[in-house]
Each structure stands twice: as structure tokens, then as C-alpha cells.
Image (cartoon, rainbow, N blue to C red; front, side):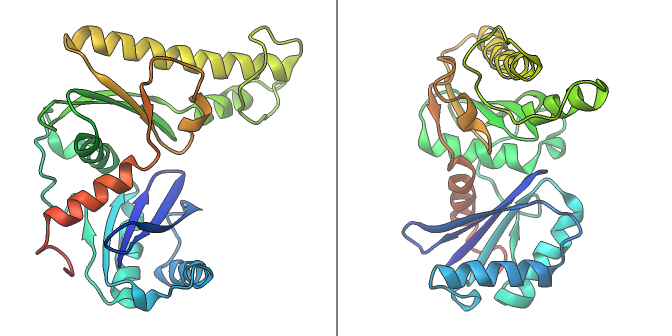
Length: 259
């Protein structure tokens, strides 16, 4: 069984694939200092709840945008799964071209999303990934990653508003019933939420205009569901895009890592 690890700045996803389908998924808060032993204890308990164990896992692929965590995730695979993990960015063939000025600067998550999107949807694509940052990534019809735009995530925007303005409270992000708020909390929710929807719609429109070709827009990421039904600019919401990309990359590299 394959353990796929997708680590973002805020959350880390652990998913198990049995060769035919994804049979388990769990998320934890990303902590760069978490040790391999701590990961193992946490993961073993969750596997047990799914009638699995660490011994069932015989392969591992890791995508991380937190460089200081890779050491501990690598040791998790080595010590407790007895395999050498496949790590995106380390002698792994993605199977796609990276058409930007400095390919090494492209985040692992953005490249994995490009692979997952290309094998799932036809034609030119625009991926809107909502997380700590919100990324807008262009994928060519041949699957090549062609760059995009990066904006602060909605949670960062809300946090900055609270921290920079002494009288504005820390509030949960949710879709408000009205755009015109009748109190401070409603006003903040309306401004951040609908302002963010406008940011998404505006960047999608400008990217499409600059690309000069039809594009299918896919929403993904930890908080993408916040915007489901709030805008027609996103054609599909696909929360499994990253793990689909990881599985495809794993299959494209049969001689890398512990395979």
C-alpha cells in the first residue's frame, strides 16, 4: 500500500492507496518540528482505527513546501515503513514540462496539482488552489506547467486585519448572508469573503484574457469548499487533485525510492 503525504504550510494530508482506490485520508496541522517518532505514533493510531497498520504500508511519496519537515518525514518512511520515500523535487520525473524562467522555484504542490489536473481534465487548465496562499496556476493542453499568480490566502487576510487593527476581533471565516454588514463581525466577514471572491474572479478573468485560449478552471485546496456555489468563475471543485497527482507521479517513477 502507498502512503502519500502532501504537506502545505498549514495542513498535512496523509492518504493511503491500496493499488485500486484511496482507502483512508487524514489531516494534521503542519508543525515543522514534529519528529518522525511523533508522526509514527499519530499515524499508527489512525491506521488502527481503519483496521490497518504501519506494516501494511510498503511505499511512500512525499510532497512538501516546508523544507525543514522533509528530514523528519523521510525518517518516518525509513524507520517505520522500511522504505526509501519518493520526494517531489529529488530526482523524480513529473512527466510534464515546467515552462517558467526558473523551474526550481515552482512549489512542489503546484507541480503535483498540474499533473493531477492534466490527467483528469482535457485542454488548457487554470487551477485555483486555496490554502495558506491562493495560487492560480496555468496548465497547457500538453500538461506543461506555465506559471501563474500567487495571492495571500483568505485566512492570512483575516489574520492581518485582526492584528493590524486593534478594535477588530478575530473571527471565523464564513459566507455571510448579506454584503452590507450590520455590525463589525458581519462587516468583516462580508469584506473578506466577498472581497476574496472578487479577487478570485478578477484574476481568473485577467489570466484568461492574457492566455488567449479557452481554459477550464478547477478549484482545489483545503478551504476551496468555502467558495463552492459563490462564483461561476470556477468550473469544477476537485479536492482530490493533489493526491491524484501524487499517485500518477508515483506510477511514472517505478525505479525511484523504495519501489
